Length: 287
Image (cartoon, rainbow, N blue to C red; front, side, top):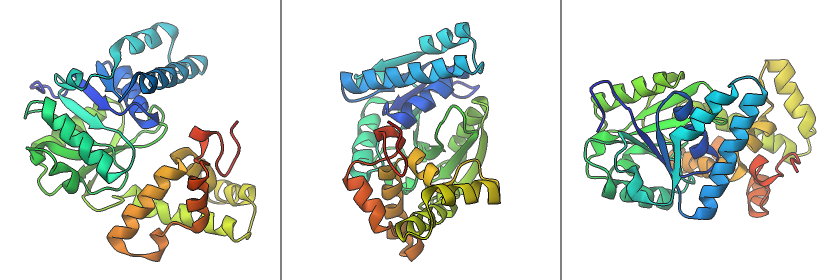
């Protein structure tokens, strides 16, 4: 249970790119964190991802070696769902598929006490829909981190229809403890950032698909012309094209607006396994 001072222990269900990034950010902030995934292979991939990220932070002088060792020691990786039972906060960070997330939320609910706050890192799925897989929807909210989590200083807090104000306030205090900035939004698909970002990204994909300009010129135009740190096609690759496609589906199903409909090229790239950085190839080649 959360102490009077807030959240002292954290668990992450899902040890992929986002889950391990959140775990690293939590451990850097000085809190112990349990990462739970489905099998040993997933755990080892998660461990390797954390090791690589910490090594990069040491090389870049963001952390010294002793601090990185302390961060490693605070992260426990396991396949046992019961290991999350003692956490004050559990964050679901599994793939952006409604059936998968609902199953995971029900699993979390089966092992945590009623006082535990349960958050979803979903990019677009309605929080209220996920919350009603649990016995206490007032303890459920969205906590949307952005990749790469250790570097990006923003978290969206999404308030479901039944989310209590106490839960929101506790979650906000936790995010600030991570050294990140909080923005709060109501429970609408896409929330603040993706409602604005996705049409922009899809416009770039359509521009490239139509042969209007090269991928490099599209990205350079937005970096130098608009001051963006990355061009839109690079952002697509960073997000993961499968994740972007799922977000598009969720947004289109909610609003039925053409700007949220995924272009055919995006669908073909996902089908061919060209998912962006995580697969080694997307709009650019990372191998």
